[in-house]
Length: 463
Ligand SMILES: [Fe+2]
Image 1 (cartoon, rainbow, N blue to C red):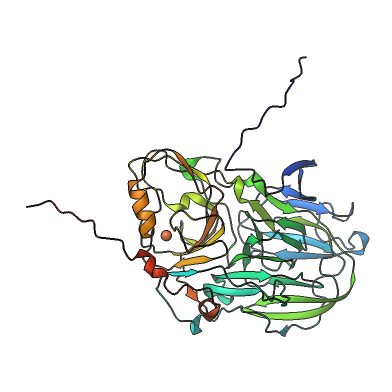
Image 2: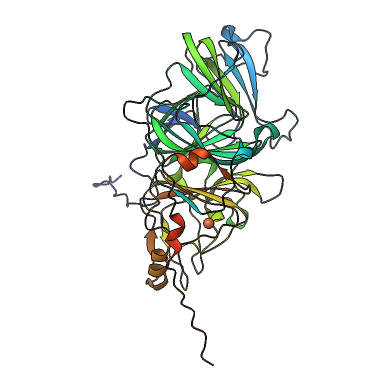
């Protein structure tokens, strides 16, 4: 057989395979490998993983005696009696059960705030420059570097959500964090998130996201980013409707860690965000002692470069719901507690159209962040690490410069948002912002002025 004399040249692709994201390779046994770690693939699958062969019971969950002297422990992500299609739980086989710790005590280590009753409503368009980093000489870990920007609802009622940012320059040595309140969707902006969880390890870099469910202990290192926390719901893939069986975020591109444990005795601190307040408890061993686990309630991550974009190929700007990566539903069909939406690099080809986002007022609240690059509808002022909030029914749209240039631009096919990744947490709740969001030094008080100078172009027909 003739052998090719030259290696086939792989065409460049502005949409996928970002050179900053470590490549994912097949690793056998249904696993993939990325950046030295192995993962399961798939969204919401029933996974089984054991770090020591034989640690996972076969055919039952709670043997009278677990292998290797392990304890069996169930982690319920949904009520026992939820329909099978929505039921989420995992079984953990660990060196000691999670209950082996000292009493929790309230701690005041950060700017977490969910006392919405004490926050003022503010209908103004809001924008923040990049949120503050730790000061020189200050050592801040993930828990200490958490700050709440906005939110609504109540974890006690299992209804609502909160938006946090984090900025940390110290590892969580001998401590870990979990939220009793809600699943956290984490969007790294600076630095790679090295996460140790009870289920295994994940590296989450810029342009990837991860979801850490309620009660999953995590230990993370130096990084900056955004978090959406949801109370009483879990993230799921959006329905595709007429799009068909494929497209947007494909299930096989979600990665879940494999079991990895440490058998370490010593002083550890477990931080627990409970009803919007931080507590901590001491224990004499590492909480990352899960030797094996199985179930469908486990953390996962996703590379946003793998999002298959669908858009108009004829005319008119589509609604941003076509860019939904994950959604957390409410009981009302089609009404999201939160949609996680991205604005990735893509071709723009529609004709007879003002191509940037249209002016609008929305019955949903829109919190946007910028992972990297330049957002198409705002020429200046919206920087990576910053944010905007356009609250329920608050008018917004392109600034004057964007409007004027897009109104007269030649509508040839072009790639837009190249090197850019903006995202939106869009919620059906009316958000309140925290005092920290107003006083952290990043709020741009004159943001509303970007729409000044949108001149009157009205030219009625002469009578
Ligand atoms: Fe909007």
